[in-house]
Amino acid sequence: MKKLLSWCLVFMLLVAINIPSLAAGDEPSGWAKELVAEAIEKGYVPEHLQSDYHRSITREEFAELFVTAVFSEVNRQEIASAGAATKHAWDFKELTIDNFLSKVSTTQKFTDTDNKYVKVANILGMVNGVGDNTFNPDGLITREQACIMFVNYFQTVVHPGGGYALEELDDIHDASSWAKDAVIWSYRADFLKGTKEYIAESITGQKEPRILQMGHFDTKGTFTREQAIVVIAKLGNPNDNHLRNLVLRGYMRINMDVLMPGFEIDGNTIKMLKTGFESKYSHIKEYFRTQPILKDYVDKYTTEELIAAVWSPHGAQFKMTDTNHLDNVLSGNQTLYDYELFTIEHNKNGYLFILTKTPGYGYFEHCGGILFHRPNGWTGAPVPVTGKEVK
Image 1 (cartoon, rainbow, N blue to C red):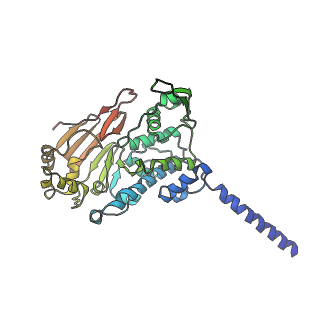
Image 2 (image 1 turned 45 degrees about the vertical axis):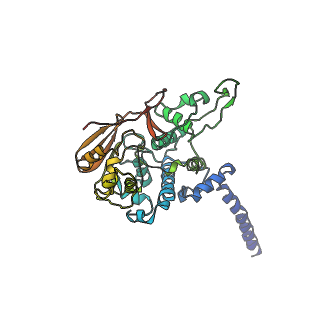
Image 3 (image 1 turned 135 degrees about the vertical axis):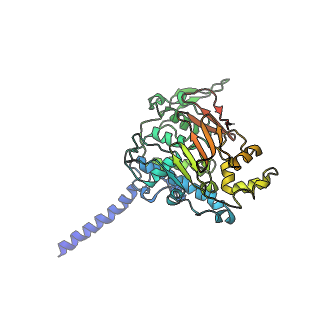
């Protein structure tokens, strides 16, 4: 009996000793701990990703992390700051996956996953799959794939800045041909830096420093959970919060008022539904009231009609509030506006408007309130995106 008690005591001591070590092994690394805790506090990190921080993160998990962070910031920034009268017109007061999918449908169906977060990531333009209607959800996401997700989503709301990836990284040419432009864009925008920083020295009389040792990006490298969380957390930096932007298919920035009528997504075509959504205190009606030439439209048309008449990709150059344009669209006439990289049609096939993006366009970038275009492989100055009425 004494031997049995002794063995029980030994076993209990071993368990007691091992519990703290197991818990410690489940903690994020010291360099990541602060940002991981901050991301969890902000609601960026799904509960099932709040452990095993050293495990490699999959494509499906990364998509869920990214979408969760964006929705969290929309809830924290736009919804939390909206007035009671504005919120009263909305069908819901919190942006969740199910609420979002009640407003937006898509024709895209991946054959290897039915994960709602992956579906929403596709609607938002973050992901497009790996071909043949597959997503490879359990595959490990690479750094170059993460770059594509970031640029796909942020390209119309962020300016990439002035980093020099070609001069500063020794492996930029190792990037896959379909990812190289996105890696350069992400590096310039500080979305993702190299795994080894370059070393440079300033030269008197020269504008640019001299590179002493090039950095390394590791385009085919993968992420651990904690690395992915830290990267996403930095995108929500209060000084430059990119995550607060809600964007459909990566090129149509929307807010909660715009979301309410609902949309159908068919590839790179966005169709706004006609549902009669009205909000007396919507952002667009409040703005129209401040403009002498626009205030008469406020009581004459619904919120969704005014939104449909003026909405276009963020920063595209065409004066959508011109009264001739407004009268033409709001009268119910079918119209077509050509921006070369996309078209906008109004009052067609029962939809308020239809936006269609042209394939093979390269990447956009946003600067100073203007949307620019940089064709694939283009190294010159970006070109402003400008529209014209066709009919």
